[in-house]
Image 1: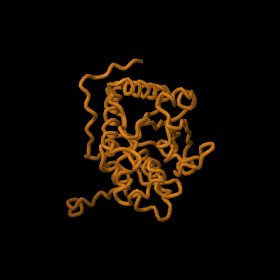
Image 2: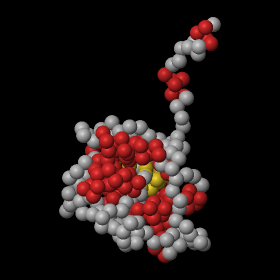
Image 3: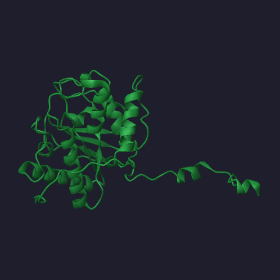
Image 4: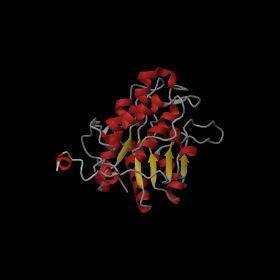
Length: 271
């Protein structure tokens, strides 16, 4: 009787404890899934594999992700340019496609969603989502970031990703999630300064900071701590984990939200 009152009987089993674990808004991706990194160099940074004629991008998912990794890369490539590459995005099997738009104007950032360029982004992101749906796969957006070479566009970039995310969710009838890479890089910059950058824009490929994006993407997908954190990287891995827990767009139950880019009239987006 006393044991029952104390809640110690019957004994708790591991399965019981797991059943009580909080459910997160975004379903986790199995660690053996096939990933496609579709986009410009920022998207390729956590992936990390060498680009013909260039050095390795610094990330380590191409070697350390337990499943298969694919890449559709166009240097400074728009969503349309990556689509027109006519490669893995449109022809291969994958479980998750990680995508992003390029900011062609480094000082001004992204154009508004109701401009021709903004409408094109929405048009092609919808095509990405449709291609993913044919495979039973998920489209995930990945934020870009500001650096010393850009204007002070970080907040506006994050707002644009939030607009695109909400627009896509309304079009698709299901949630769309965003890897808060821009938020994470901003936090790295606050802590470590501009030394994190190689050229005022890209993270220094010879440093540990691109690996931080690999940890961020791994934990975003699996909703678990990264098992291949390199010695000396515990602080940037912890920062990645905390970023995911804090921000709602990551789908892990965070409370910090981003206001979308304001638009007076919803854009008309062709098929």
